[in-house]
Image 1: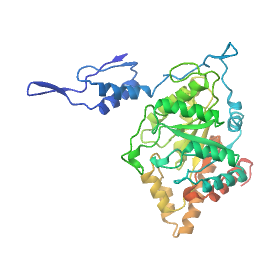
Image 2 (image 1 turned 30 degrees about the horizontal axis):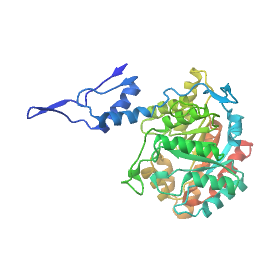
Image 3 (image 1 turned 45 degrees about the vertical axis):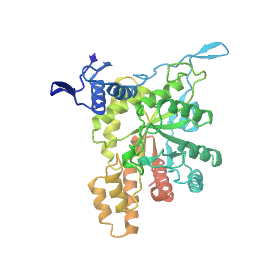
Image 4 (image 1 turned 60 degrees about the vertical axis):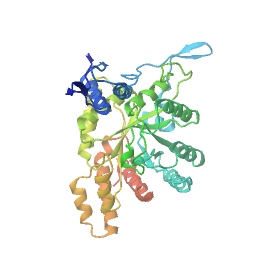
Length: 397
């Protein structure tokens, strides 16, 4: 199916035929054509090099369309091999997930300055408390912080707890992404969470330039290709990488059907596990899991483990900020009302913990792990909630 649109409807001005559709608008419709089933997309009257360039950037988001379904061909000692690294051999986290163990991770946001003392202290507390890994966001909410790769490496080297390194498409072109991924794996960092990234307009430097050569689906395809010994140009890289590929999901997205569709694309591209946005509406998460499991069952594919995000609310202000300011987070009215009726700052923290425990008790049987946020850098609430979850798993209350 070929689609070759004009750059909008032509207008006649003083005998000149002009097309007014912008490259950005043209590219957005290229995405819609792709979702509708188009496999070849071009441009007809009125399209310029800028229109085609914008459209091509969108199409690259589906790089290696359909995912790399079989191991790539690599050579060792002159012999051809097609073996990809099994999930249980990629990392200790990969082993635990593949063997059905319940996993717990703690989110540690990189520092705004160059000193990493506080991040390392939190990672040490996480290790001592028994967390399986620490999650490290990559410029969350388009903020400028110390590099996520450097933070992950310091934590891995100095503390000895496995990092899950978030990696976003916003700040690098596709060549830089491939270089970064190869460098990460060469340093022993195998656990990644691949994300599109928040747009700069919502962050500290709204006039900074976003790249977005590809999105999280294209990045998942890229990482999966490297795991099969193939680079972005479909050339052999020699020995394949062994990334444990994670992706993000948002069960309360404004367009849930599109979010589910994108999740299925990520699975087709090679996703091995997923981490959800903070869960405040458990019904939405359970519906999301049910739909995804049904989809995979129809394709005779094993379910992809989902790790539920848990955010222990610290105050009413914290809840309002998440609801109104953080993309992808929606807090139901019953939680907002409970926070409003708390009556004091200390009571608000207690209500926040009670809400988190209720959410954990509902979603625990349906997810394969929990990721805990650390609002205001506080680790203790996350430790208490992990212990609560482990007690539930062992049958204690």
